[in-house]
Image 1 (cartoon, rainbow, N blue to C red):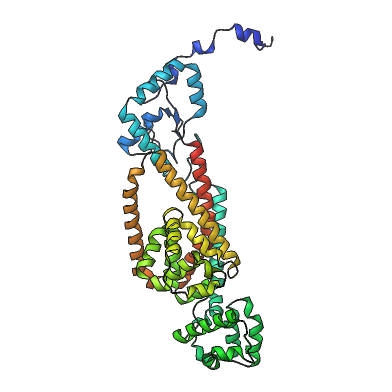
Image 2: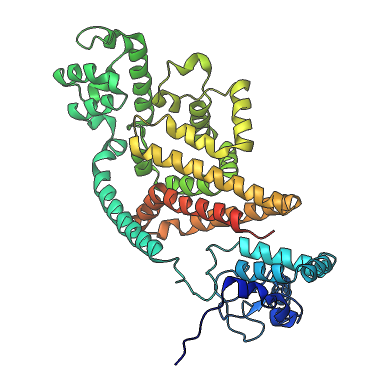
Length: 444
């Protein structure tokens, strides 16, 4: 039996052109029955012009194939291989069809709406002929499982730890022991290490602490000769006398004293920093807003002297220079305000502050990408409408949280708190990567 030989390169050159043996009808759309323009292949295998698929989606509002009615997963992408082949085989017909489509206002509007719908999808579309698992793949499943386990462990760990760290914020000063007085003094800063030993030697308990004056602190046996140190101790002591208990001096103590407010601020500042800061200015000016603005926008002459704890007790009204710096960042870089606040707490919360700073940077990138998407689609005029919708969304969520907060178990609140604090940056990294890939693959 004689073997069939393959044609040589010279024979292939002499053979009739392939393009002459292929007709336009073999590359026709199953909707308009004309040559395919930006062919989009669905999961079922059928291909359509992208504008035809957009017109079908606009009229039917269904994610299904116009021919076989099989639902497609994710968001369909242009079949690049098929598009390149058609454009090389029939360049003249393709150019003529593109001109006709550009003059069709209904087709261009439907295509723009279809692209907007795809850009708003939370997950990337599966490739043609392959259906990805709805959860986003093996990596997303493993990440979700690990984060859930970690949140439960963190919730248990911090629930058991609160009994130690939150003790003084609930215990009256008059009942403090000498060891608790030393613990309170040590939280003022590393500069108190020398004075702690002297307080312990004198067995200064809560009752004696309330009687100490500036002059007594300067003299033996305490010998706090540094005027700045003595001023800091006296100022903190005055706050203790006014409140009757130790004021919160770190994140965990603040969370122990005001768990609902801590959870609200964590989620509200993440979702809507501008609206939340405006709310704090109007409703919690002295206790929250003033310490915040004095921390992120300190007065230059006081910046070197005041530590982070002293700034929390600074209730002076901001000067014009502070307001100017704050308003510029508030308008253009609101998440930078949160990063700067966390930066001042690096010595107190080493890892937690870094998580907050990274998350603020990621949220700034996401906000910038969102603004760029509006600009590229020429939808900047819709910003007032989006702002109004966002305002009502945040107001509704805050109102519902205020209603259901008393009924939510403390353990569930702890899980939500640590999820937003430590695992939201991981989620935002994934969102930034998807947004960047969307910019690279988006069909304009």
